[in-house]
Image (cartoon, helix red, strand yellow):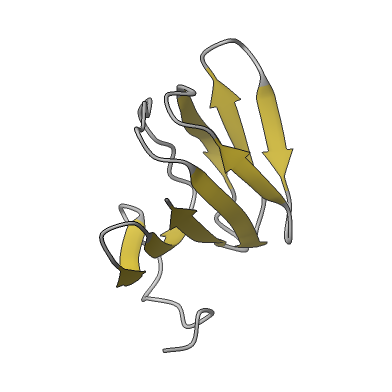
Length: 99
């Protein structure tokens, strides 16, 4: 697999592919093309790298973080958040490590 191989566009929903997982770690590639998410309240820590595109993560405490190609962020357990914006051109390609 090449991390930059794209599915047929446009996509009605985000595409999540589990690249590897164990009892302690899960690595995902997510492709977004303008989709936004509901609120997340995760028990895991998540290390996020945005490999392509631009996105905004909004937190329940009114913080927002704008991400561009190459930016990273660590989302701590139970830090309630959602993705409130993703570009469709270019699509967002996320590499996420949950631990």
